Amino acid sequence: MCIPVEVPPDHFAMAFYYDEANGTLEGIPSVVRDADSVTLVTRHFSKLLVSIVRNTVLDDLVKKGIDSGFRPGGDDWQFVNRGSYIASAGHCAGQSLTALWYYCERPDGADPFLWDLYDNNGAKPATPGFWEDDSLGYRLASRVQVELGDSWMSFANQFMGGLAGANDEATFRAFAYAMLLTGEPQLVYIYATAGGGHAMIIYRVDAKGLHIADPNYPGNMERRIAYASGKFAPYNSGANADEIAAGHGKAYDLIGYVAKTATVDWNRIAHYWKGLKSGTVGYDRFPDYAVVVVADDGSETPLVDGFESKQENILIRVTGSIPIGTKAFRDGVRLQPDADGRYPLEDGNNVIGISIWGDVNNNPQSRSYKYIDFQYFNIWYGPKETTGCKGWALESVTPDWAPNEKRWGDQYETDYVFSATDGAFNSSGRMWIGTETAQGAGSLEAWVLFSHQGTWTPLPSCIPLGETTTITLNLDSPVVGIDGTPAHDRGWAASYSHLWVNINDGEGLYLDDSDKLESASTTSQGSTESLVIEFNLTELAYGKPEEGAVMEVAVWFGALTGDGCYRYKYVYHG
View 1 (cartoon, rainbow, N blue to C red):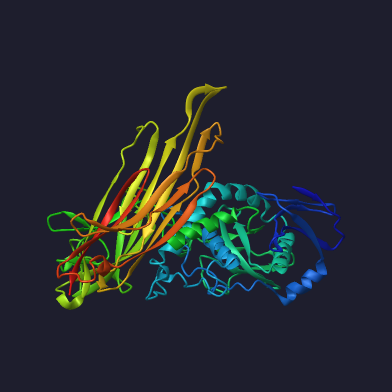
View 2: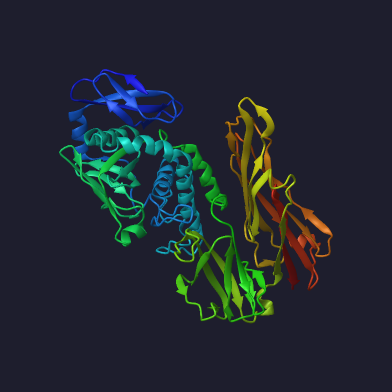
């Protein structure tokens, strides 16, 4: 897009988006600047303006320092970019963009710093220095990185890769002027002439150059791209921290200015942030898995929080459709299995963390394991005092779910997935909605791609007499994708998912039903829903439960590809 503008000598011109509702500006990358025009790179069009500043004025401000207020160790993520199963080369852009989005949008209010806020997914106790249990933030960074690879990066790389290094002086001024007028940190893409790219955040511009928050070096305030005499010095980093540690770092010599929304869909980050808050982020892309305990006879039992082990040495296995590797931790210290692969338990409660990794090569001759997820489980070993729970004790957790049969068969329904664990379910697939009638040169081949994820908060192992229990249900249904040949632009009926809770007396007499939580997605709109359920088992037992009385709390869930429930059996001990 070329904008005619008269630029006086020794002046710098830059275009900005103008948000009339909020009165805010955002810089726009430029392909060419000359005395008569500014040519822009943008993925969308909105109100904009061109601002011109005298070079000497901007240079004087740079000498004093132009600062956004963003700081590594306060506003970036606490974990290092090592990549993941779905972003095996690294998720630098996803990690940088989500930190930038958080700083600009303040989804948790004005005060919280992002650093360590979601350490251990926000649970206590905090585990600073141990990154693997920061699974929600880590999966968010990878999921946004994948979104970039699917759509945004094809646009950004097409343009920004050619622009980086074209005019270092103009690029340096773009960072300085954009930060001056917006007060916000800026995104930078850097490239190596020999190949490869990297994304980071610029948070300050001064006479030393561009100060950087690099996802390969989180919390490090010493990183910067040096600038002198109109030229950037090469910046040393890598695709991810593991590549750097292995001696495969790179000197990135091409530096490019990138705006927030000119090359990326800012609102999609907000969508994935909702997935972080509901605990479902990445369910549509990371591979499914199941964590089980293997008994001496080879039988498998789902490992759930509050599991009671009869064995001092427990065999935990994670199964899935891909080769999976695991690590186990207790109190942040890695546990070493015995010769049979069993982990030792201590008497009483053991908080065991399971780190789950998948082989991206799927090749036994060349394994390459990358991060998938992390889960904590409370596992009890040894005798329990009967007075341990005065009230309703959780005796068992029973999964009762199954995939649905395809209505139309494999020809029209493919990649159907339905899985569930204690606290979550996932449903996804592809459905053909085309027509076999010839239209012009050929027939229409169109498919919709749908997915739903749901979570519910863990049920307590003990509910004291008379206490009200609260469960939060969450559903996330992203916008339905569509593949068409030729392009299909018709609407499609909504795809639904649901969650609800009911309670019975253990013999089939239903005592309470909650409101049903539903979410729906179409080709134009998704939805993220939450519902808080409260119940009181003592009141449902008419206030005077007998010793050994049973209550079953069932969490029901379902979508197009499957349905079922998890049954939580409570027994009263007075």
